[in-house]
Length: 51
Image (cartoon, rainbow, N blue to C red; front, side, top):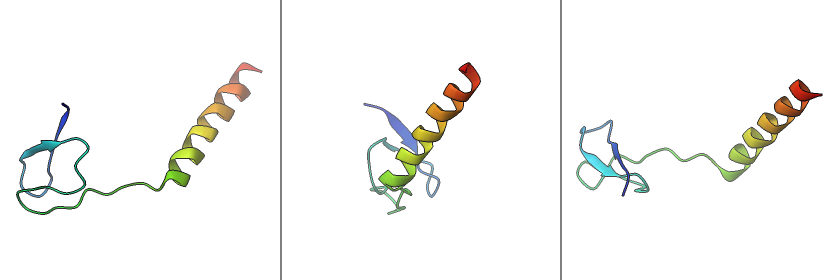
């Protein structure tokens, strides 16, 4: 399982954890609409470069 470092206490936690079990730091989450918008912009940029 992938791990990431908590910026609050520098402990390794699961990559899919919403909060650090040691210090309680809550990892920020991007809304789905922001992720979709980013992918649409990437696809449009690639299409613009190809055409």
